[in-house]
Amino acid sequence: MTGVDAAAIPLSLYLHFPWCVAKCPYCDFNSHGLRGAVPEDAYIAALIRDLDFELLQPESRPIQSIFMGGGTPSLFSGRAIASVLEAFAKRLSFAPDIEITLEANPGTVDAGYFRDYRTAGVNRLSIGVQSLNDAMLKRLGRIHGHDDAVSAVRIARAAGFDNLNLDLMFALPEQSEAEAAADLREAIALGPEHLSYYQLTLEPNTEFAARPPKLPDDDAAWAMQLAGQALLAEHGYAQYEVSAYAQAGRQSRHNRNYWQFGDYLGIGAGAHGKRTFADRIERRARHKLPKTYQAAAGQAGALQEQRQVGAPELPFEFAMNALRLNEGFSPALFEARTGLARSEIGPRLAKLAARGLLEQDDAVILPTALGRAHLNTLISEFL
Image (tube, rainbow, N blue to C red; front, side, top):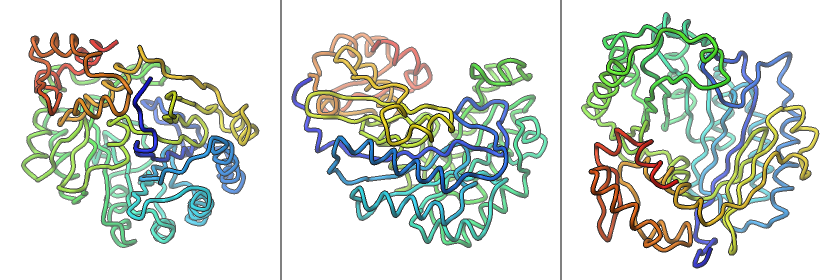
């Protein structure tokens, strides 16, 4: 790996909060049903120890964005979120215009918490609505209902948040095309600046995988997706990534950094991180179980995986992210983030262009509409 200016690669921060009130049957994230009270102080202390361990490899780049995901970060009080942000700000440089996102479950919304999050510096909320249909929410095993979701948006606005994302799924169990469209129309009517609109899939090691519900067939799911894309565009939400739609100027900076193969520190139970150094790109993953993680945080024992990304892997790792963007990527970005020459992937690009899956010139390499519809096929060519 040569020619990489590690200092020029943007750096973000991901914090994982692993507990939920209850595990949803479709969820394959590192989340654990809560038993008893949230161990706020102990977990925040573990996060701080974990960061101190991570920074044994010093980091001078400013943090461009922070994303607090889970699990359900909104189970944690504003005091707890403020304490972790204050501690991290003492150890890292935060960019003046930093984007700080916190995920919230409508079933755990507290007006006081939301006001305290905003005071603590959180300036973007991502609310996991998933559906606005009570019957669908019940089938999904969600702990909230329609009214809770609408109330969460109202409370967020009252707390001063002017940058909201709503997560919404389609192709839900026994969902009709009309129901999916009605769901999306109501979500749009709530006026979020950003919408993550994605298809429910059955993931391994989930309750739904073990006992699959009746889902719409592929043709119905595709019809829902196309209708949803048209509806979102009609209301000023431009698609910029496979499942991400935003009003002008409101794309997720944090997620864009992932998709452009930027760097990120991953702190918390099960968190993944990627860092570029002068001579290597390194990935780390923490232990998933909260108890195991907390006991080892601050030591190498908290790491479940640590590996160097070899040069043969880099084209696939880069393409797996960058080709999710509708705008594609520039050859210069590929070279700057991987240290490889464009010629390393030239034959693959030519093959994919001949199949009509991507377009390329000296300035940009981007998936075509056909390529976006067959993204897994497109990306697999880089393996």
